[in-house]
Length: 90
Image (spheres, one colour):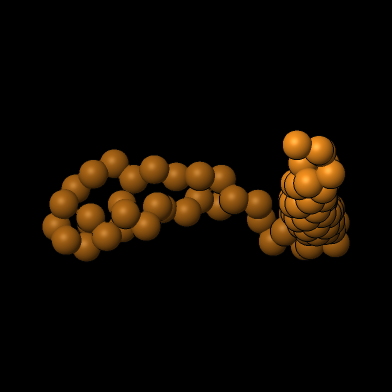
């Protein structure tokens, strides 16, 4: 079975003559057989996207924790430096 491309049909409707490209399409029995075979890609793709989203969320959480720890260390270091400077005689 051959199908004419949409643009070729539209061009013909508008009075233009161009060569029509065709492609082979599976017949009804081949389509019926193909319908019984499920393609694993969509489920695999969904699983990959979900895994990537979990990884991204974990990375964001880790980055936020790192920033909080950096701020805490900086704050504590500053406080210790002030305590040390205040305790020095002179």
